[in-house]
Length: 149
Image (tube, rainbow, N blue to C red):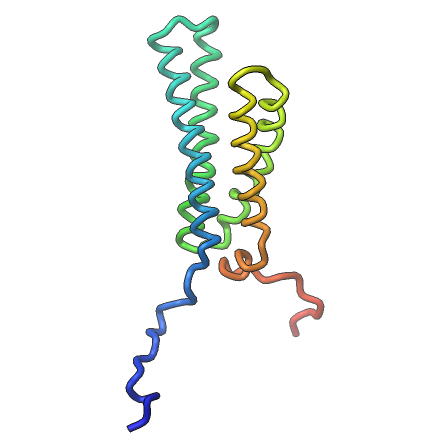
């Protein structure tokens, strides 16, 4: 009996293994999404129970942050499931984080370290989302040079 007959063949439903890059990218997106949702809930709580300068602004700002936080959370879930659509929201989230990080870096006090962390997370996630291995793992094909017949 040959050794090839003794080795089990992979099941047809099992695809290629998920690269660690996708898990890291999903974790970074989930971290950003969770931070936005927590910040939004905090703003909502301050608007409801605290004494903000403008209640309507606090409530609308909180709702906006919660809604924006759902985007990277859905992207993280899609990345873990290796859905090709998840690359777009993950990329957009990082592009939106860069100007926020720049603004925080130009502020004073405790906002500067926050800006440094946000910039590091956004740049790392951008590198991961634009990596060709991530693109291949998500099943996204590059541009075609010849038309299909």
